[in-house]
Image 1: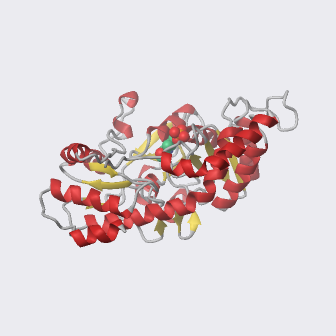
Image 2 (image 1 turned 60 degrees about the vertical axis):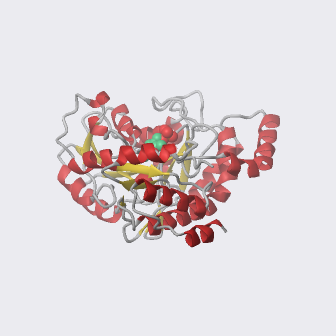
Amino acid sequence: MNIPFLEFSAIHAGLAPEFDEAWRQISSSGRFIDGDFVRRFELEWAEYCGTDFAVGVASGTAALQLGLAALGICAGDEVIVPANTFFATIEAVLSVGATPVFIDVDPSTLLMTAAGVEGAITKRTAAVIVVHLYGQPANIDEIEKVSRAAGLAIIEDAAQAQGATWRGRKAGSLSDLGCFSFYPGKNLGAFGDAGAVTTDDSQIAERIRSLRNHGRSQHDPGRHDYVGGNHRLDELQAAVLSVKLRYLDAWNARRQRIANSYRSLLSELPVDLLEVAPGACSNNHLYVIQSDHRDYLRDQLHVRGIGTGIHYPIPCHRQPALSATKTPPLPVVERAARRILSLPMGPHLSKSDSIRVAKAISNIFNVGQRVTRDEYAAGSQ
Ligand SMILES: *Cc1c(COP(=O)(O)O)cnc(C)c1O
């Protein structure tokens, strides 16, 4: 019995009648772009996040790119970003002609900090992208203090943080705008690529609605107010997202139980766990541990049928594509890149799966059977 890193079939099988009904409606309506399913999902997503507006777009990358463009970030501007993020965060900055300025992260959470932001502010800094990595919101209150004092725009990269909260408020509602990805592997995932921008600012929402659709005027589709592109969310993806959104909280609760189980079982073992800061409620998108023997651990878990991932093996500032960018060493991110390992995580897992993973790690490090047979039996029930 293998434990895959990610698995969708069981979850989707139960929802098949709801998907089928949506396909039928879309097929018979003949409307595949810019129709009722997109509008409905936008309303649902804004309500879920606690924002006034949500604008559906083609991907999380598009959400970041259009979000930066809508805020007027452009060539000559610097945008502060953590070096520990998915590469798309950086691509978005470069796509509007701005310069990413990389900062290091907190060793206990691997998230960016207010002190890091403050140290990177220059006369040219225009914005900061706060990445809620692995599903844990960064301390946005402190980041907001130093950023607002310097007049910066604040964007959340909440691609991994659907449903996560900071002091009771949802990720994506904590700044000028929130950028979401609904890539299939995210906690809320489409059947392909999809994304959204959330905001309370009606002008920003309108601009993104226009930018996602070739800069068209809302009132006169023959008129192009901006140079945008084709970054639209389509009806099929929006319908999938509306169906799956109804289960997001239940799935996140299952992830929390797995995370709790991992935490209690692994705290005995010679691996380092990430901390969850007071005020942060993670959606447990990824469960990341650290070990000096990461590659050995990963190989040995693979041999035992347990899938893992590394998020991310090369820090963004070290990527070959950015070799022209001169960034000083960022020791925390660089050390973490050699030590991090993402364990299986998702609503497809049971508590007994998490016990099996912990037992495997215990065996690999040869620290004896810390997980007793009784605990195993209790978890399997
Ligand atoms: C997934 C992800 C993105 C990009 O989203 P896509 O939908 O794949 O374009 C951006 N930032 C982070 C942190 C992500 O995890």
